[in-house]
Amino acid sequence: RDLQRRRPFYWSDWKDGYHRKVLSATFFMFFTSIAPAITFAAVLDSDTRVNDQPQLGPVEVLLSTSITGTIFAIFSGQPLCIVGVTGPVTIFTISVFNLAEGFNID
Image 1: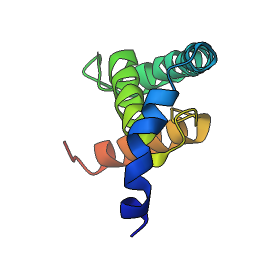
Image 2: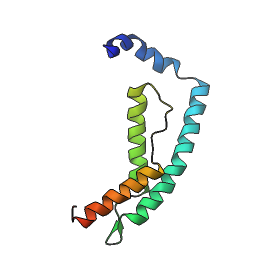
Image 3: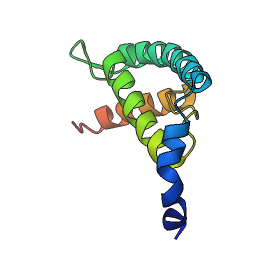
Image 4: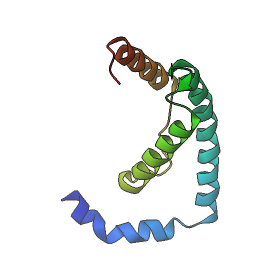
């Protein structure tokens, strides 16, 4: 029901959003999100190695951050919310990786 009520305004939300201030805020959020993503990706790169091959690294982190951020921005109605890698997420990912490695799960 909420989607039906919101449908007439969806296109105008995107059309009205093309403004200089929105563009500058978008670039600001991009550059504030990319620095921690690369930093935590370096930690994941060093802690998720199998046979000296990293399993998660900067490419995977940046790709997943961009995909989830785009999906969140399109469907949530909050395009400037930060969706990315954080310290607790990195620690959880490394813990799950170590558990899977301990149980011999590929």
